[in-house]
Each structure stands twice: as C-alpha cells, then as structure tokens.
Image 1 (cartoon, rainbow, N blue to C red):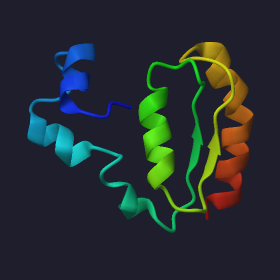
Image 2 (image 1 turned 60 degrees about the vertical axis):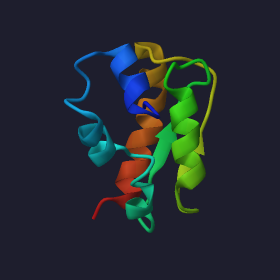
Image 3 (image 1 turned 90 degrees about the horizontal axis):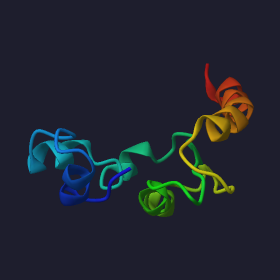
Image 4 (image 1 turned 135 degrees about the vertical axis):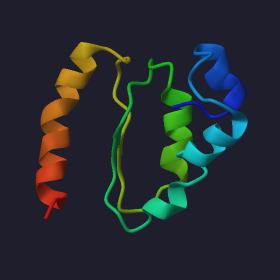
Length: 94
C-alpha cells in the first residue's frame, strides 16, 4: 500500500496512469467510506508496504481487526494468515 503517487511510481512506473488516478484509488484517503464495514488487516512488520498499512489501520473504524505479526510479503506469511482471514469472512459475509 503506497502512501503517495511518487512512492507508487518509484516502486512501479506503471502502477497508476496519473496522480489523479492514484488519488481516486487511494485507500487511506478514502478509508472513511469503510466505516461501519468490518475490515481485517494483517501486515507483517517487515513488509515493504507495512508503513502504509499502519496508516490505513490508524484511520479505520473501531470494528476493524488489525494484526501486525512478524513476517513479510511472502507466501508463508499469506498461508499463515489464510485461516484467520477465512474465519473473519465466514463471520461477516451474509
């Protein structure tokens, strides 16, 4: 999760077509639209996206579940989080 258009372009020059496209899809600045919706976030503290995920977690509502275990943006981390994510979804999908 990038926190600026400049950061996104530095990581991947084709990530967004323009600064306005980044702004339109910026999850952090649009987090208020998630208020009242259960959200689960898991980010390994060694993940390169972790600072942006921390920012998002800071602006989400109180019904969010936020976990910051050790780990990184890797398959073992995702596999470890999968059962917890599925459990979360099973409790919140109608």
